[in-house]
Image 1: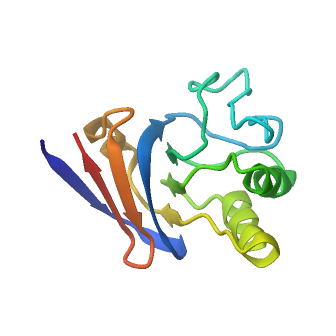
Image 2: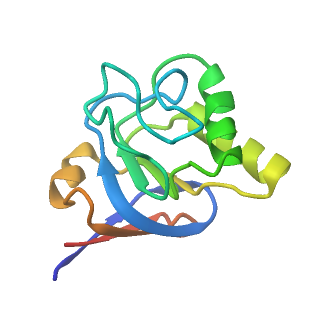
Length: 142
């Protein structure tokens, strides 16, 4: 089994692991994820129908309004959030939502940014991923 390693910039500290869930399109939690289930509901999403719960969620950048951070917070509250988020560009909604989750519920979600989209081709959907956002490291097996 091979391991791919990527270096980015940790935005929200923490360590997490889980199976990879990869989107090649812009992503939003606002009207895009059902907080009560973690299922992606955005009709424009290439991962519609997938569940973000416990996954390391990869996407290039966020889209939509700042209400996405509130939707993200509700997803965390209901126990259906991803274990970590990895993006190419900074998604302020994910960052703000994770900061709020840590402050309100004591449960932040690590966020790493700056991972080039071409790295996604080296990661198989469902493969085990470890994130250490304090070091900006993302490691995938498989």
